[in-house]
Image 1: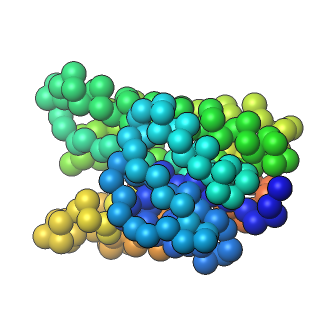
Image 2: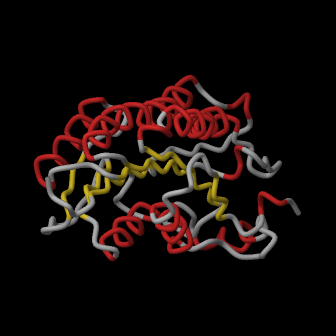
Length: 235
C-alpha cells in the first residue's frame, strides 16, 4: 500500500472545496476531487470525478477511483452542500428533497463507503463542513432546512467520533460563517460582513487552514471548529 496519504474532497469545483483541494496538495496529499460539474485537469496527485454526490453510484465511483489511483483513503472532507434560505412556510417539498438528498444523503453514502478503506489503512479522519447557523440562528437568514440537514450531520459527527474512537477514525466538524465565495455576489458582501462581530467576511483560506489543523491534530475528535469571525459567541 502506498504511504502517501489520500483525501477525498466533495463539492470540490469552486469556493471552499477548491481551496481544500489546493491546501491538501500543498501538504503532500493525493486528492480525489468530486463535484457535480468539475472541469480541471488531473495530475499525478489529483484525480477528478464528476457526479451528483446525492447518488450512491457517485460515492461508489469516488471511493473506487481513490483506491485504484492512489491505493487508499485516509481522509474525507464532506464539503458538498445545498443552502436554501427561505422563511419556513415558503419551503417547497422539492427544497426539502434537494437539501436532504445532498446534505444528508451525500454525507451518508460516501462516508459509509470511505470508512472500510480507512479501517484497512489503519485509521482515518472525516471532516464535515457545516454552518454556524445551525447553532446560532440569525433572524435575517431564515434557514430551518439547513439546520435540519447540516445540523443533523453535525450531530452525527459526535456520534461517529465515539463509535469509531477505538478503531482509529476521527470525526470533526468545521462550522464556517459567511465565506467570500462565488455563492455571494459582491454587492452583498458589506451586509453579510455585518453578521460577524469582526466585521468582515471569511476567506476560503481561513476554512482550509482550519481543516488542515484538524487533519494534523491526532488527539482531536468530536470537535466543532468555528471559523466564523465570532458569530458563535454572539453579537
